[in-house]
Length: 145
Length: 145
Length: 73
Length: 73
Image (cartoon, rainbow over all chains, first blue to last red; front, side, top):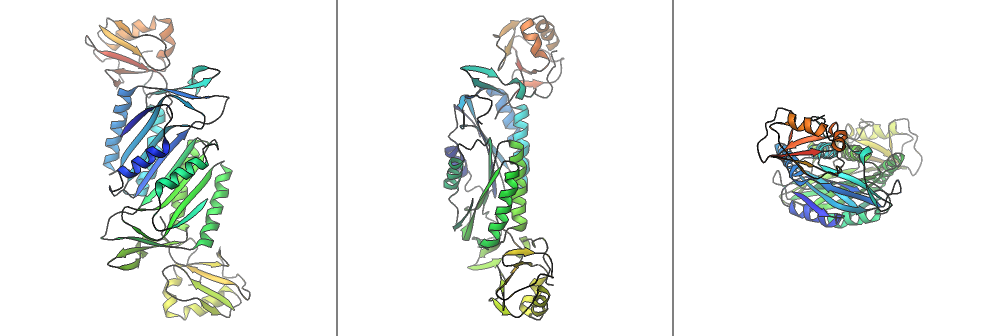
C-alpha cells in the first residue's frame, strides 16, 4: 500500500483508513510514523519531487521483507508543496508482535530516508531551492563519474 | 497527557485529538504505538486493572525524561474489558527530530511493559484469568519475601 | 495502624496492621498462607511510591501496597 | 538510441544518445559541464532498476536515469 498525494496529507483520514483496513487482520502492534514540516530556517514550506517507478520497486521490496516477519508496511507521501505544520509523510508497520514492529519502523524510516527517490526543496522567498545539504546520495552513487 | 478509558479505545479519535493538540508545536516526528487484542488461545478478549496513582507517577517521570530531549509522550489505556480486535493501548512520542522519536517510542513501550502498574486477565469461558505467564515482576520485587 | 493493600490479581481485602517498618510487615505477611506465595514476585509501594529497602519507617496512617507482576498494553 | 533522463533537481532535459553500455554514457556525460558536477553523487538506473556496474549492456530504446541525492519525508 503505497499512496501518493498532491500537497499535504490528511493524516487523520489516512490513519483511520489504515487502522480500519487491518482491523480484522489480527495484528497486535501498529506503529505509524508521521513527518510534519517544521518552522525553521525561515522557510515557508517544503516541496517534493517523487520518481514513482523506482519508489514503487523500493516499496515492493520492503513489502516482501516485511512479509517474512508476518508484518506489513504502508506508506503515504506528498508530491509538490507542503506548508509549515502540515504533514508530508506517513509510514506504518503492522505486525503480530511489538518487537518486530518497533524494530521494523525504525529500519523502514531510515532506509526510506537513504534510498527512496524523493527530492526535497525549501520554499523560501518565492523560490524552490534543492535541499542539497540535507540530502543523501543513494548507495552506489558515482558509477558514472 | 495520560488518559484512561473504560473499555476499548476509540483509536482514530484519540489519534486525531493528539495530532491536532500538537499541530502547531513544531514537532517534526510523531510516532504512536497502537496495541490491539489478538485472537489467540481461544480468548474472548482481555481485561485490565490499572492502579492509577503509581501509573501517574511513572508517566510523569517519563514526561520529565522526554522533556530533556525536547520531546513529549502521550498515553491512553483501557480499564476493564476489551474484546478481540479492539485496542487497549496507545502510546506516542512527539519530537523535533526523528531519531529521538524512534528511539524513545521503543524505550517507552518496553518500560511501560516492564513497569506500569496494570494487570492483564484473559477473558475465557466467562472467566477472568490473570495472565501470570505473560506478566513481568516490577524491578525490585521480592522485598518482603 | 498501617493499611496494607493488595493490588491486581491478589484477591485479598485490605488489612490493618500494627508495624513500625517494612520488616514488621514482611514478618506478618509471611505468616499468611494466601499472601506468602505472592511476596517473591511483588513490588512494594509506601504511600504510592515504590520502595527498594526494608528499612523504610512507617507511621500511623501509612499505606503499603503490594504490586504483583504487571502486563499492560 | 538510448534515452538519458535527469531526475529531481538536475535541470536538464532528457537526452538521446548513441551508446552500447554505461561506460559510453559515462564518457559522453563527463563532457557536459552542466551534468559533470552531478556524476559523483548520482545513482544510476537502467529501465527503472538501479544498477551497480558499468558493464550493463544497453539496447536501442533503453532508458538510463540519473538519481541525485534524496531526502524524502
